[in-house]
Length: 219
View 1 (cartoon, rainbow, N blue to C red):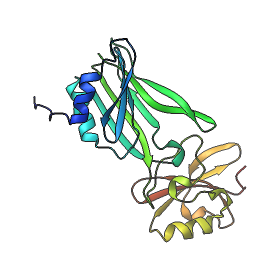
View 2 (tube, rainbow, N blue to C red):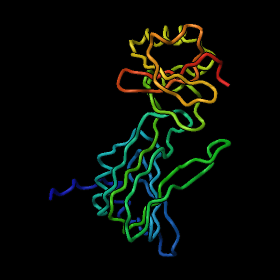
View 3 (cartoon, rainbow, N blue to C red):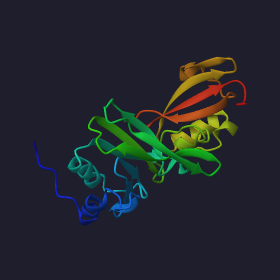
View 4 (cartoon, one colour):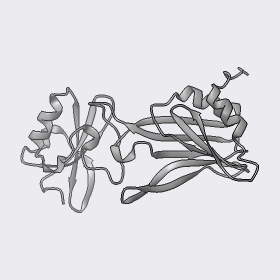
């Protein structure tokens, strides 16, 4: 088994103070310059302050603690930047990782993940980061239709308007027919009428977007 690289000085501070103070309280400790954790005797709270973090060093610190935790960051909307966008875990006698919720504006969202210190099964934690200019991303509840493909307010578009904007970026377009009372289904471009409305737009495969279209304006 390959020995993980030694932790950075900030990580050593975490190792030294990770158990909390002698009075049983919690001590907020900087894991790396870009991230921080709060540690209590039985849980480690993972909170990414700057999603542009040195993930390799973060994963090395988990390995040093005997944890099989994969931390990732992905492009996300402004509302989901720095927030937990996905959590996957497996059964472990020590318990399960839990999302710590906080208030983000008017809504509650996941702001950290609490992991039992004796957790030894696999867990995958994904935080959102700010998208780069022109970068597409997956959207979720609370995001505006079309914002993940760079066309916020897409519900005001007719098909030709959306297509023209996307073609300028050399993106391939796939269509889904979406109408009131029916779920979306694939429809060939030859059957998409120019007077149809766009209901939503999502990121597809690399260089591709999916447009949800129909004869009625989005409600």
